Image 1: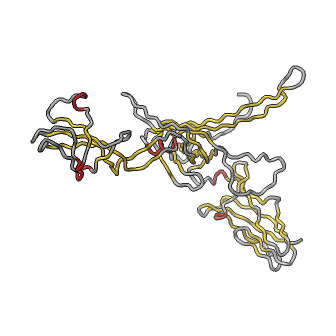
Image 2 (image 1 turned 45 degrees about the horizontal axis):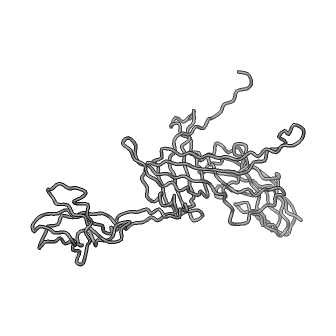
Image 3 (image 1 turned 120 degrees about the vertical axis):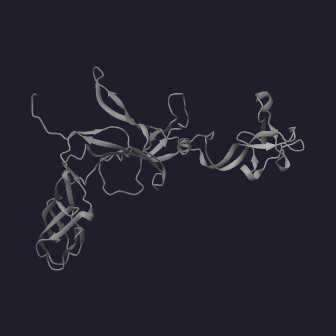
Amino acid sequence: MYGPRFSVEYMISKFAESVTVSRPLSGEVLYYSNKLTEATGTTSVTMGEIRAGVGNPIVAVIPSDSNATLEITDVNLSLAMRAYQTGGLHGYGAPTLVCDDLIGGEGTLYISSAKHGTPVAGQGFSEAFAYVQEVGAQSTISGDGIPYPIGEGNEIEGFAAEDGKTYKVWYWVNAATTEYATILANIDPTVVNVRLVYPVYSNVKEDGTGSRIGSLVVVYPFLKLNGAAGITGNGSSNATTSISGTAISFEESVVQSGCGACSDGSADLVHYLYVPCDNGSSAIQGMYVLGGAYQVDTGETGKVPVMLMVNGYPAVPDPAYLSCVALETPPTGTSLLQNGTVNAGSTEGEFQASATYSIGGDVVASCVFTIGIGG
C-alpha cells in the first residue's frame, strides 16, 4: 500500500438490542421491547443551491428542511403502542364476546350474569343481544346469525327454546381483563422520547472475553409518532408492531450560559452515544486546567476549570471521581476544597495544586497547576 498504515480498533454494530419509549421530560416508561427485527433511523436535508454570476454557477449551498425519522419493527404484538402511535385510547375493561351452554326451560333461555357478567352491547351495536346455536345440530348463518334481544332478567327474547335442549348462547359482557386500543377519528399521534440500544463489537479484544466492546445508544428526545397502527398477518409471517415517527426539535427549557455572537441556536434532533462496556478509562489521555493556571480575586469563590482529554476531545470530569489538593501552603485565609472550589482570602499570592481523576480506586489522570489569589 502507498502511505502510512495505522492501527485502528474498528467499531462494528449489528442488530437492534432494545427500545425504550418514555414520556418526554418526565421519563415515565410507556413501552419496552428487546424483540426487534428492524430499527432504522434516517436523516435528510434539502441542500438549497444559490446560483449567481456568469454561467449561473453554484456560489453557495444553504441547507434547510432538516428531517430525522425512525422506523422500528417489533415482533411483540402491542396494543399500547398502537394507541400511542395514533394518540388513541388504551386500557382494560371492554365489551367481550363470551358464550355459555344454556338449557331451555318453559320455552325460553335465561343468561346467568354470575358466570361471565352482565350482558352489554358490543362495539358498534346499540343494544345487548345474543346469538343462539343448538348444540349437536348444524349451524347456518341464516338460521343462527339472528340477533335476539336480551330483556329483563337477562331473558333471550323472541327465541322459542325446547325444554331440556342445550343451546350455545353468544353475547357480550364488559370484561375487566380485556385489553383494548381504540383508534379515534381525529388521529393525533403521541410525542414520545425513544431510546434505542445497538450492541457494538470490535475486531480485536486482547483480554479474550469476546468481541463486544460497548453499546450505541440513539436517543430521540421528541419523536412524533406517525399513526402506523395497522396489523398484518399471513400464513408465513407473524403480526408485528410499528414504532415509527419523525423527530421534533428539542428546545431547552432553561436558559443556558454563553453568548455566542454567531450562534444559530439550533435545537437537538437526535443524540448518538457510544458507551463502552468497561469504565472507559483507557480512552482518557490526560487532564488539564484551562489556561494552565487559575486566578481568583481576593475574597471571592471560584471553581478550578479542570478538564479531561478523551480520545483527543475535551470532556467535563465527573466531580465524584475528582480530587483537588494543595501542594503548597495557600495564602492566608485561602482554602482549596476537594471538588476544586477555591475560597480566596484577603491575602494575595499563589500556590501549586494538583488534580487527580480516579475510577474504581485507580488514578487514570492527573495534572499540576497554579492557583493565583489577587485582584
